[in-house]
Amino acid sequence: MRIAVVGSGSVGTGLAKAWSGFGHSIVIGSRSPESERVVELVSSLGNGVSAAGLAESVADADVIVLAVPWGAAEVSLGALGDLSDRVIVDATNPFVGGLNLGIGHDDSGGEQVARWANGAHVVKALNIVDARLLDGKKLDNREISIPICGDDKEAKSVVVGLIGELGFDVIDAGKLEISRLLEPLCLLMIKMSMKKSLGAEIGFRVLRD
Ligand SMILES: NC(=O)c1ccc[n+]([C@@H]2O[C@H](COP(=O)([O-])OP(=O)(O)OC[C@H]3O[C@@H](n4cnc5c(N)ncnc54)[C@H](OP(=O)(O)O)[C@@H]3O)[C@@H](O)[C@H]2O)c1
Image (tube, rainbow, N blue to C red):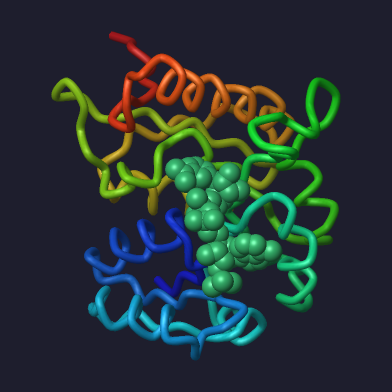
């Protein structure tokens, strides 16, 4: 599958590395694809990973992953061009002024992304897992659970497949408005990781028989 990962930071790099290892064709969408940093990054990733400007990166993509800071989400989406009927994985968290959720309760970042990316099929996913664990690392011998949500069944099924391939326990948690619950959950994970000194290697897991 051809996947455009928009953003060349921790999440973008982690996903490019992980998915390219499964034979997917990855293009990193960057504001500066020709910068020394991005050229070196692409070369270190190997596996046919490439970088391109934002609009170019998504041109032939089957799936687009939004992996930029919240403050850059609207501008980045705007730079991608017409997103009608495209599948967008929204991995962002709507943090403002540090670790504060700027949207919540009766709205969410995921729903805001869907409004900005007018006509796209937005799936909220991967926002609660630390970028350092994106290779599907198991914790306590168990897969980390990744709840996803979205309004389009076909888009969700593609995303469930792609994330499941990495070795995660993917759970379809419902409609896109479930983002209102997934985004605070990310904050809880970060607070436990940072403030309670549990470190980066913690993950969310839904236990069931
Ligand atoms: N880090 C995590 O563990 C983690 C886990 C889950 C979800 N998330 C969420 O995923 C998103 C990306 O996180 P990240 O940790 O990958 O961020 P990051 O390391 O800061 O990288 C973000 C990338 O976004 C691009 N970008 C576009 N506009 C930007 C701007 N105005 N300022 C800075 N960067 C800009 C940059 O790539 P170019 O310079 O190439 O354009 C940058 O490398 C965030 O919304 C975050 O909340 C993070």
